[in-house]
Image (cartoon, rainbow, N blue to C red; front, side):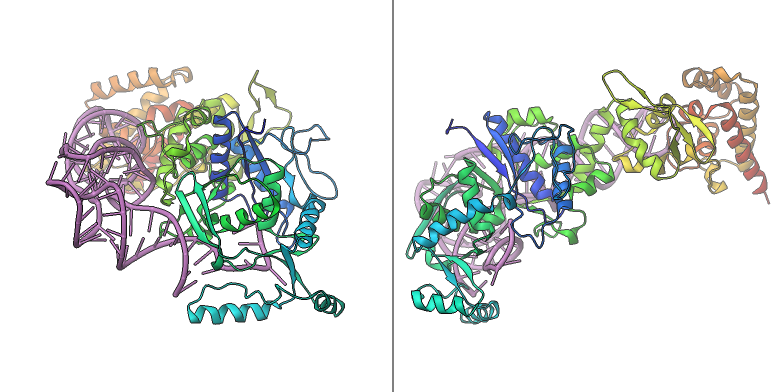
Length: 531
RNA sequence: GCCGCCAUCGUCUAGUGGUUAGGACAAGAGGCUUUCAAUCUCUAAACAGGGGUCCGAUUCCCCUUGGCGGCACCA
């Protein structure tokens, strides 16, 4: 069992789920699954000041949204899948909750005491301001900024006195001198650090307040993590952690440092580059499958020409050897492309379901109470009322409307804007937009009038794309109108847009009455516009 | 400043001691078409520089340059 691959993601709940963290989670997940191992989630909330349950919730929900599930954790005592516990907030997703460092303080205390007893760690009473000054002066001399070791060898009496005075202290780990710390990074190869360049690091504020570098070492050991896959920004923490593992008698483990995700200016992706939280992308209407596919290619590639991967395919193909060494710029155009791809491939019922919230938010539709029903093996759907026109719309009709734009949108949030012509009562546009190329205005108006009359004569049931297209095309030929001169103005009259779905498709969803209203409106506009 | 990591089209990248240096996104041109989108075809676009090693380096080594990361009583 000890040979089992076990990976983990260890986010701190001091912010929403960052893209970098999500990608690291994905790589850890893929690596574990590929090798029939376990993937673990551990919330690193040792910094109580900055940690917030809200962020923990965001992290868990984000991972769940992506379909990155963890295989261990405290068992959910209350069966519902997503539940906020009273008192201390926490939540479970599926069967397991996350491990939380804040709940393991006693464990760390034991090991902290052990290091102290063995004189591998010591109390330090230096004030922060003192240390800062020290670092400053070291920098000006060109020396590596590190702790001087002032408190490293305090006598027992001295220590007692300082404690008695109530002087504030922290616990430092004694970094062994003259050590070349070597380790093999699975992505970068052999790496080496000189221990003399590392100062004795603070591993806890006190026995009950461990700090990151210490808690990670303990947990990775106790949770039997086999591979640490994390961002490149942790490379320089690695020698410290290895030295601590040695001091505690823990076996060492494998490391793999991922290239960073960069902003367009090639610096580590951060807020000033725009959205860095996964939930912002979710809100914009990126699909989890697309997000996953996109993130996997940030630093990894399958060495084949295949670009589109499901989660299962990623698991099958993933290998650490396919991970590159240099940072990758977060290229949103590529994300848009791949998201559009997934939008186009999606079943229309599912797509419609996902678009509804955006239409609700835009104030176009609202739920009709008690109209819910279940699609077998799928999800609950319901009917809606269109706010602007005060008409009902069934889920089926809504599907037809969304389908108009399925191949035109890149992300779900675009849907209200491109479909406003359907949900609004009246549309606004410049009369000149009705003019096809350089066609004469009167000609355009005449064409519209011919089409108007023709449509008026048609029964409601003929307002169906295939049928209608044939009939109108016949009419155009018969009247010798010219396809563009006839169809462009109709399309504009119906959509009010430079670009939109075709006129027949729009007519089908708009139906007879609304179609004719709009054509009449267009004719009126053109008449007014004549000098 | 110190330590470390990295370096192929604008971007993500494949690749090799001898290649027309390949693909994708984006860009441009064209086809289809009433518009947009989708789709199809085509075009332009890269081995940071300098030394070695070698018959031969984009590839191996060194240096330079550049970029980035870390250097907390954050993680």
